[in-house]
Image (cartoon, rainbow, N blue to C red; front, side):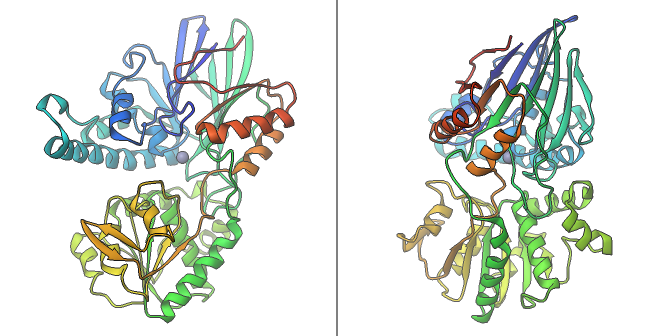
Amino acid sequence: MKIIPHGAAREVTGTCHEIQIESDKGLKRILLDCGLFQGKRSESAVKNAEFPFNPAQDIDAVVLSHAHMDHAGRIPLLYKNGFRKKVHCTYATKDLAEVMLMDSGYIHEKDEEYFCKHLAKSKMECEGPLYTQQDAIDCKEVFQGQNYESWFDVCEGIKARFIEAGHIIGAAMVVLEITENGKTHHVGFTGDLGRNMLPIIRDPAPMPPVDILICESTYGDRLHENISTAKEHLKEIVVNTAKRGGKVLIPAFSLERTQEIIYDLHVLWDKKEIPAVSIFVDSPLATKVTDVFMQHPECYDKEIYEQFLAKAHNPFQFSLVKYTASVEESKALNGMPGPIIIMAGSGMCEAGRIRHHLRNEIEDERNTILAVGYMANNTLGRRIIDPEISEVRIFDQTYQKRAEVVHINAYSGHADMEDLDNFIVATEGINKIILVHGEMESIQPFSERIKQAKNGVEIVIPEREEEIEIL
Ligand SMILES: [Zn+2]
């Protein structure tokens, strides 16, 4: 058996790990995830365009952990290049992937249009988008939904089972049973490992004993704020901003973060801990994703079940919340007096409707800008939360940062270093750990701690395309 990382090797995007085995019916090759490389356009465009295999002939199946684009985002391209076998995933991931891949197709179309108009030095550079919305629609036919905790056949010699990852709705870790030349290996793949106590979704399930573990390392060197403080913090911000008659602007990722905030606001409203402030979800993508959340109560945790479903309450619909559809409705929010809450994408303020709201509201000291996610370097979101910066450029104009800026980090959907350590210690039977999905600054200290905790375990920190032989 061989494991070959085609992406997310010493970096965080482009997850795609190939497993090769010799079976009675010849060489079998499957992929764990097939994600997009993200980051600098010039670098990621090259990595995204080519597969190091022939999708039409070489790959027998894909097992997909979850619907984030750095894990699922190249499936339309795989299909476009002739792949017609199955993509196995949970039912919620199947529905979410449909929405997210359409959006990704749209972004690729727009991105290519902009590139050709403004940046390309010659027509030769304009080769068309990586894939289109139509490609995203076409690839739907290869998705195969699976239940959590049920074994299914992936191909000759390989069986798989999804277990809860606690990361986003539908997200799973993968347990593989692989038989080659009469010998059986158990391989675990974390996908993205989540955290305990996140709103809506269940906590990560324990990984059963595996001899090989492919483990993510995103926050191998960092701790998060405690999730139990997040709702209280959110309450304070809404109450204080409402007292000033201001607006709370929340730049939020459409998938998971937006639904978590709506859910927490709903709980706070039911307990009358926040005043009657209108909440606008101003993002067509977030609205579509919220619909998928409503269709998959099988992924909810006990708390949401007891507080809402058992009482026939919809967690994402209540009297204060409105989902804006048209651009006109979105524009109408400008003239609306506070107090109100507006949630819009993109999460890092680099695109989407949030930029319009920020432009209109950032200079009013009654308002609050509430960051609830990670803000990468060189994004508008990062400049907004940076206390050293007093003015920002939005749509080529400079604005003074007079609104209050608050950052709640506790909603992160990723395990932090303590969660990762506990997960490794609790997983029995490991001979070999393959560390992926992390920058070296996270992987290195994580691997040192594993050496201390798991004496004798072999740790591999592969480069892209490195072939890891499993005997
Ligand atoms: Zn993820």
